[in-house]
Length: 266
Length: 178
Image 1: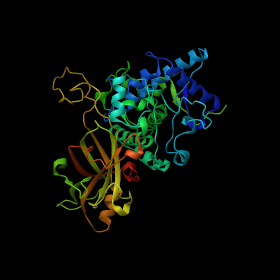
Image 2: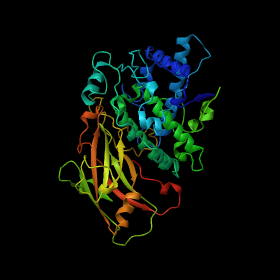
Image 3: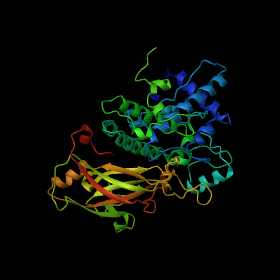
Image 4: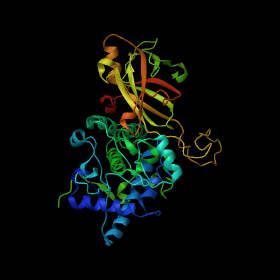
């Protein structure tokens, strides 16, 4: 069982493993690599992501699940260790630390200039798509032939508050919950700014995955709450392309072999 | 329900004012939750947020988001940032009536969303007043904060309605979203 933890509770070794996994995925340029997974959300076309529909939560759960497996594969190759695993941590943007400091420290550039693979991701698009991004979304990526993602975060205290999330967690129906949580999710994308502020290139920023782990965790918390409910029956057998799974198959995270840990000791 | 075509442009031409009288002519009934429901919201362009102010037709992007100014909440649209396909790629087709057409809706199909405004509406009513207008203040969420501007060009929607509910779930008692 893989354990997803809060970024604030990662050990130094765990954070290093995640950094190594992202760096290894950046270096894979085929359908095992970072660019492949980031591109499935937007550019290059076709974009598969689901927004503004009731598939938002299940589609992104499948997305994280398969990306997490790709990260582990990349880390195993990089470390030459077939038993190591890595899990996507969640960024709790409602926490007091987030409202004081903003982005988690592990995702910031090192002050000493040492590279941090979690501070920005390479945007390996073709010339046509890069030109389109630069025209439509100025400032979302750096200049030059090998651009990386940028950020321009707002005041930390503008992040969603615990009360807002608590209200969403009391939503009485899946439809209501999904709409509320997607709205909160949208706000955090805008708060981070840079590449995260636009669908086509948001997933190229490494913090995208920590943000969506938080969204997925909140869905899980709602599912196990007294208000938790399944999506409408008409959606349960809907395929979540390009992933070979249906909505029904991603509802129970224990069957996906991961868990969200409030605390892990030892 | 008020269609977007019925909205008035604010004095700065950067906002939209919706006439949405509440209580309606039949009088005020009990309610525990009130939502402003928007349908047909466009998300094809840059990301943007829409700030909502009650009975403040002069509200602009620089108006403080406080109760004193009638602020009721906001919603954020996560935009697709323009079209990256060839001509026609981003034109949203009408939903097929063919039951064997199993394709998902076009990714740019306009979405529906809502903002719960219970507390802000109660503040209006508790002072013996009535809701007359809702001012929509769209502001772009560009990659660079310095580029963010009032963005009336980004906000396109089909209609808006105020829905008041009488329910007893805890969800209705929470604070309004920020």
